Image: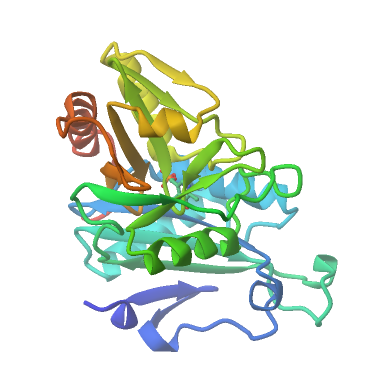
Amino acid sequence: MSYRDAIVFVDGKFLKGDEAKISVWDHAVLYGDAVFDTARIYEGKIFKLDEHLDRLFDSAKGLNLKPPAEFTALKEIVIEVVKRNAISNGQIRIIFTRGEGPPGIDPTLCPKASLIVSAVPVPPMLGHQGVRLLISTVRKKSPISVDSKIKSINYIDNILAKIQAKSGGYDDAVMLDPSGYVAEASGANIFGVKKGALFTPPATVALEGVTRATIIELAKELGIEISERQTTTQDLYTADEVFLTGTGIDGIVQVREIDGRKIGDGSWPVSNKLREGYTKLIHSRFLTAAN
Ligand code: PMP
């Protein structure tokens, strides 16, 4: 099924693919004034839906955007969208837009937020093979202007970094924070392994990823040392293993090269162990959507 044929929920209606639309006066269209979250569907079940919804409601709170649905009602809508699309493996996207209002940025003139929920069988964004990364010259937005915990639809910095990476023949970009420390990839968090211990940048400039939190929890359970600390590009170049985590990339994707430097020796003991643990988790701790 193509995303164009998917059933999409928009403001109370289940609509067919191309018929699902929002107003051109919605402030999401005019100013990128909207928040979203995505979750993964495995065998018709949604992984960590509550965690993704919690983050979505927190993002909305940050923008003082009144959610267009309550938590429990939204959960039922999400489950219904997955059912109606008969998706066994894919991705859900939930968007709260600011809603329609007159041109002019004042969000208080937009009386009602809109809700969009879609579910499509998309393949993992970066495939499953080891990826090649470029350290982008495009810095992540400073959390002084927009807190990275707000997952808004405005991804322009990430998109600029992705353009740079792809035009240079790389799979994805590593983005640095305004001070030059590693933040994350264009749509995923980043981890390194040195002498058996894990490290990852703090979630101050990077998004506080649900997968990132799951991997940290898993590492603790497996007795792998983990530190959330300022990370330099040199830390990545000289790591024994580097990997990305995220919903869109379907968990863990290992990195084989950064800026032309080969990472590690081609064996992946720690990330393979984590991936194994993660695979077990997604088949045990999730919410039933179908039947
Ligand atoms: N960073 C960015 C910029 C992202 O867009 C995502 C994907 N939502 C992530 C990290 C990973 O977050 P999660 O594990 O919650 O999908």
